[in-house]
Structure formats: C-alpha cells, structure tokens
Amino acid sequence: MEAMALVTILALLQFMYFSVQVGQMRMKHGVKAPATIGDVEFERVFRVQQNTMEQLVVFLPAMWVFGSFFSPLVAAALGAVFVIGRFDYSASYRKDPANRGRGFTTGVIAIFALLLGGLVGAVMNLF
Image 1 (spheres, helix red, strand yellow):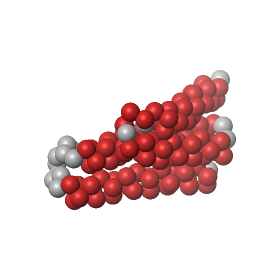
Image 2 (cartoon, rainbow, N blue to C red):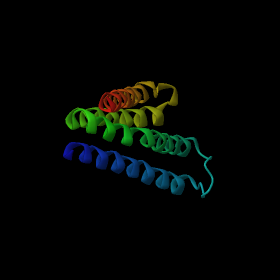
Image 3 (cartoon, rainbow, N blue to C red):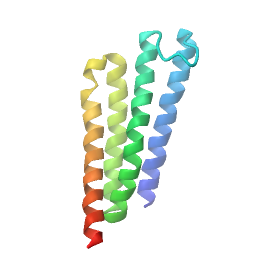
Image 4 (tube, rainbow, N blue to C red):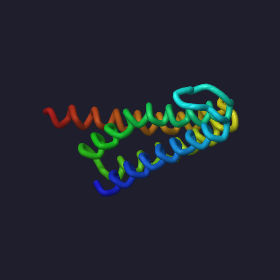
C-alpha cells in the first residue's frame, strides 16, 4: 500500500506542477482568468493540465481498487507508467499537439490495465 500511496502523491504533485505551469503561462501571455484561450503556448499548457485532471478521476480509484484485490506493487508500477506517460504527453503536446499520442496511449493503457484488473478482482471476490 505504501508504494500506491507514493505513486498517488507523485501523480498529485505532477498535477500541481502542471497547474503552476498554467499560472506561469497566464502571466507570461497576459491571459486573465477565467479566459481559457489566448496564446498557443498557454493553450497547450492549459490542455495538458486539464487532460491530466480528467485522467486522474479514473486513474486514482482504478489504481487503488486494483491494488486492493491484486498486488499493491503491480498497481504502483502501473501507476508509475501512467505518471511517466503524462510527462511524455506534456512534453509532446507542448511541442506539437499532433505528436501527443505516445504519452496519451501509455497512460490510457495503464488505466485500462488497472480498471480491468480491478473489475476482475471485484467480481472474483463476489463469489
């Protein structure tokens, strides 16, 4: 469980880092809240942060459910893959949004593995 807690904290710190980047881009490009459009550099950083938030809603519970029914270490390893995928997604999206696929796919595969494993574990424990 400790490994899953560590990955949870890393994922949340990553999200906070992406959020700080949005604030920095707002100041750099004069994009005043609540605006979500402006300079392309701002928009890309904003989309990375928003997409990461959207993914966290599924990722975090999936990792904890998987870890509860199977292995916390495997859950944490898949969680680490998700976090690494998010960094790749961020770097790729900021350079050219058309090339974000590898990082996005890495994270989504980790999430699907966690969801599927959690589902199988929950069903097996029902019987």
